[in-house]
Image (cartoon, rainbow, N blue to C red; front, top):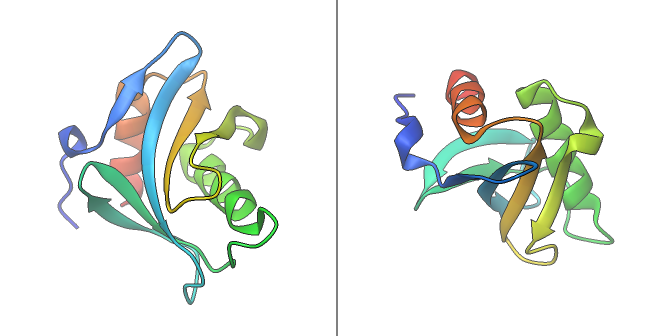
Length: 103
């Protein structure tokens, strides 16, 4: 998949990078699926019940970005498909580089 990191909406902050994510719950398997309207598109096998999808999302992204799970957290959109996640300790450029490599 040919992906341009400039298409991703990632902002640098004082603690790390804020990443826009669009999730599709109840997918066949959890995976990064591309970019949609500036947001990272992520299919999740989990249902959006009792935070299960958010847990799978943070685990998947922490694995892909090679950071501890505690450094990836949902900062907005906890109960929505459109979310913003904080990736602590990484710059926006580094997050983009790692995500593009994984796509």
